Image (cartoon, rainbow, N blue to C red; front, side, top):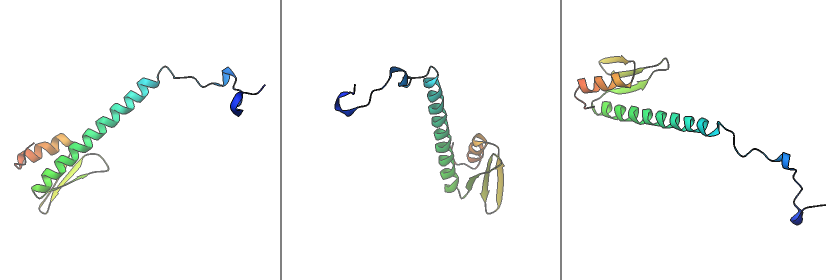
Length: 94
């Protein structure tokens, strides 16, 4: 016997499960990680712009950390917190 409207017959065991028990926690963790990365990128961009106003450049190093540079200075910073301290030291705010 065929289904009306030309639809094929689907056995109940062919149906995919509606959700998995850990599905929500997995996607929540991914969303939280995406938000954290987005906030860090925004903070990096803000620090980079403030340093540019003072004549410095800010680059991320492939080995970790950051490089602050100017024509007469290069300085390594292990994290964005250290970049912020340097910015306050030169009078660039927080």
